[in-house]
Length: 315
Image (cartoon, rainbow, N blue to C red):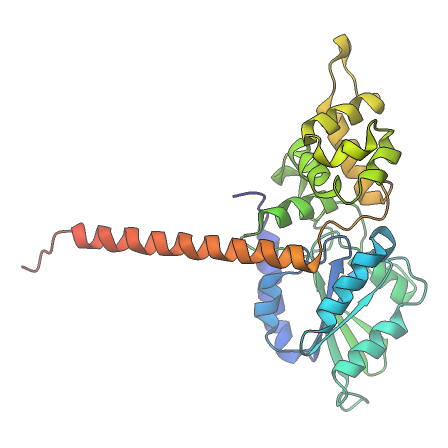
């Protein structure tokens, strides 16, 4: 099943978005630039329908610039969609966002037809930090724990531009297993919903091929060129030894090593890393959808056989 996290307050957020979207002209979805496919909420796409969408690849300063451009090109090729990249700490992002939204809804302007925009995103994607930068004051709570924001609020970015903020939200079933691990690695999943060592191993698996130089430099790993073919647990063990995560008797503390790797990824200390490309993500999604379809088929067949085996009491 992989990693799943959809606590009760997210059900409330879903209902709030369902009601709010009826009056919305443009939907901004804030994505993590290091995992732009995995941090895109498929349930949000269903809830918002064909409304114009602005995809904002946030934390671009932590992501691989070449892969960020690939994702921008991919999203900008979609109908009724624009994509831009931002840093959460960018000094003046407001005008860029307003301009992009107005281009998506050119018929909405002036006090008689104000542009109504909703901003959404997975937990811990940097939305609250971005909003605080945009309004020049602390309008939203921030933190490194998933699920900080719990209420909707309206922010007026211009006299005819209303921005509705929503709490961070995942979706009930993450069918792409890689996405669950990537979301957990980014901090979008509550800490009680995953094993840190398991997530760290999956993170190493995702970055050791394309970013083996960054791994070697950060943790002073030996035999740099063979890193892509080494086992993930072997690499985590070496990282533990290199970073002093060693217990009595010389035993390595893999839990401590996992925390180090996850914290380094979240802070960008490993380097500018992007875990997925559009082509890779499309492959993962297609495989997951095929597996889900097969599972539904098997369940339907099982239910059919059970009904056929039940006695007919009308005879």
